[in-house]
Length: 252
Image (tube, rainbow, N blue to C red):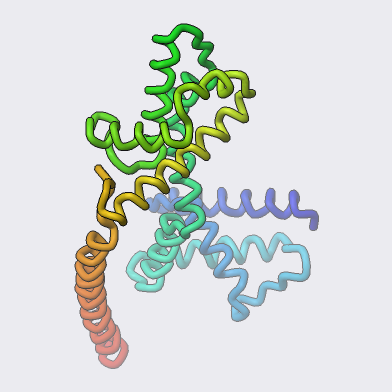
């Protein structure tokens, strides 16, 4: 079966299961249904052959098996699957987290970036205003300090002037939009490096958090909280296990 046709069949099955569950008074998300369909199909005991096209009887059997599991709301395995689905939907790996952070950062800097790259300053006052905007951009992009803090702004200004004096604005304005954006990012990294170096030397670093010190406190506190949550979860698991074992050995 072609991939597009298979996807269409799967969507149809998911939709049918959702409608059937709704008819029985249970509103189930498509994500949970899709997860259940996959689990049922991959379970060898259900007898589905992945190498051949699903027949009508296979589809009916699949729908029935999924509905039986989804409507069995007192079954702990359903809650386990729900937790797994929730985790899959909400867990973000490091790469995705950083990509999202960069997207948010770019969106926040969008207006400032345009004000700089689209600028056509000529007069002295306009050039000074443009330079101040570049300083603000560098501060905002680095995330190290507030643009409203005078000491931080002075420090960033001094660092920027050492590598990009205001006299070079004329050359900057002749660059293409893309080259301007690239240079702004490079200036941010250079200025940030200067500030971090100065901070390490004890000569600056206004508005720069002492991350090692912060982590020294935050990591143990986080681990303690995780251990507490883990112990609570274990306690509940042991309790539920005991209840299930008792129910299995001594049915009413």
